[in-house]
Structures are given as C-alpha cells and as structure tokens.
Image (cartoon, rainbow, N blue to C red; front, side, top):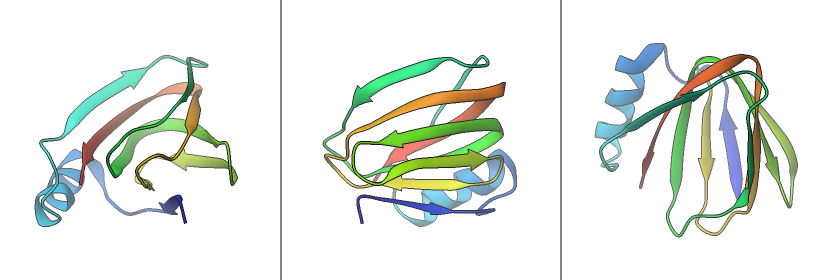
Amino acid sequence: MAASKTPGAVRGRHGATAAFAAEGCSPPRPWGNGPGDPYGFHSHEYHKVLFCLEGSITFHLREGGDVDLQAGDRLDLEPGTEHAATVGPMGCSCVEASR
C-alpha cells in the first residue's frame, strides 16, 4: 500500500521523536499551518513518516482517496506516492522524517 495510517500512534512530540529514533529516521522536521491551508499534489523520493501532533489535516491521495489525521495519528507514505493535503479547521502541528 502506498499510504498507511496508524491511529493514536503517539502522545505528543516526545513520542514521535522516540519513534523516529527507534526506526532510524532522519532528524525530525516540525511544521504547522493555519486552518484550511492547502498543499498541492506532489511526491517524495523517500519514505515519509509523519505524526499529527495537534489539530487535524487531511491527505488526498491520487490513488486511495483521503486520509484524515487527528492529534496522535501517524501516516506513512511510500516513495513516489502522489499526495496533497488540506489543513483542518483548527490548524495543525505536525512533525515528519524520512526513512
């Protein structure tokens, strides 16, 4: 599967940082956006691991539909997976790394 969601995977930034370290991921990169902010379709050449820490965000997959993330959820995107996103009504705070 090109994308997989793990609901309630972590509790906060510390849990995400520990998960990245345990899996040998790159250094984590935190980011956040305001309500309704969009990201256009794109892909990455690496396996992306992302945790939603606060708020919500919906990822739109060219193949596979939408994936809604809430605080604590994890999203794994395989290399080359085309995706876009729309930030939820309260904004979002996320952290991601590559594997």
